[in-house]
Image (tube, rainbow, N blue to C red; front, side):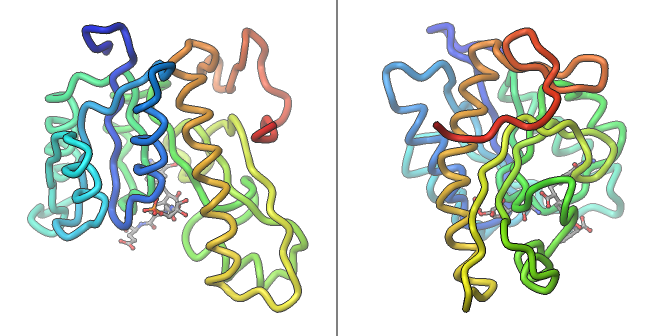
Length: 218
Ligand code: NHR
Ligand code: GAR
């Protein structure tokens, strides 16, 4: 749960580039940080995120989903790897596998996901493409508690990004991603400082149930 110096132990799950993981690594390096990343786990052996962890001296594990016959056996192995790092918080940072109900229940109230849309809009995959197709003027990213409902758990905070004329998927994704790097460390820091919690199916910040997501970051 906590490391010897009293910081919250965080395990980060990645599938790809791991730039959000990097933002957490950088934030955790600050002397003022209330959290510490004790392990990084990927379902993809080649994920660049694993190299970022190694470069930062963080232990890594690979739980390759292609080696398991079904989601339950994969999730059981994933849980074993996570619990080996004794975290107080699990963060999905570009993690691409849908998790079973048993798995989600095990980490209820202590698992966060960063999703690249202004939830509840554009749940699921290919959010930037779908936002452009829908012609929205504003897009963004959300950090939410992970529940059984895919991308449907209570949202804690969001960043908003204006869609520009001429934006394509890559340009929009890039501007959203840059803001994700502010959003995710902010919310993980709140969690580590006991400022945010999941209670009665809602997200709470500083003792108040959120009526709407907090807009990040001042
Ligand atoms: N699991 C649960 N139970 N609840 C959530 O809210 C979850 C989750 C697992 C992952 C991240 C989510 C996102 O932010 C996330 C939230 C993967 C898929 C998906 O369809 C959908 C949503 C998210 C992540 N995955 C495919 C699958 O079959 C595989 C896609 C691929 O490998 O590229 O698991 O968007
Ligand atoms: C991020 O934009 C994250 O929000 C998104 O993937 C990217 C990962 O980038 N997550 C999902 O789409 C989850 N399905 P990163 O690996 O560089 O942090």
